Image 1: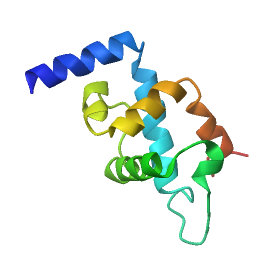
Image 2: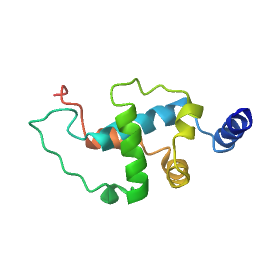
Image 3: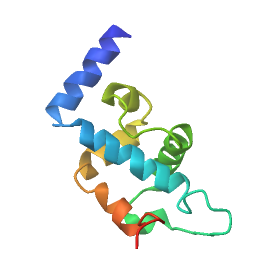
Image 4: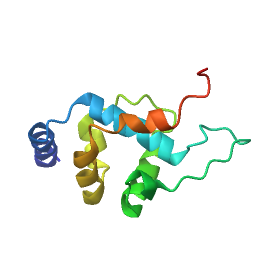
Length: 112
């Protein structure tokens, strides 16, 4: 476990991953899991491939969104990294600076 944790930290440093990237990933995963934001009266169907998310990555992110559905997005990066599939890790590294756009596409319900 210690070796895996060290490897995870090294990868994060090499890729210039910051806590904000992981928080953005968790918020995106929460939206991907539940784009209707928990409202049963609101039906939202989303083709995540249109957002550049491959099917295998989509499923990993949905699982992550379910696991952290009501959690703060500020979870240590090594914990999140260990829950990502290799495909999702690659996708995350390639999209880390654009994840905030998911929140822009699905504005909060309490906003005017």
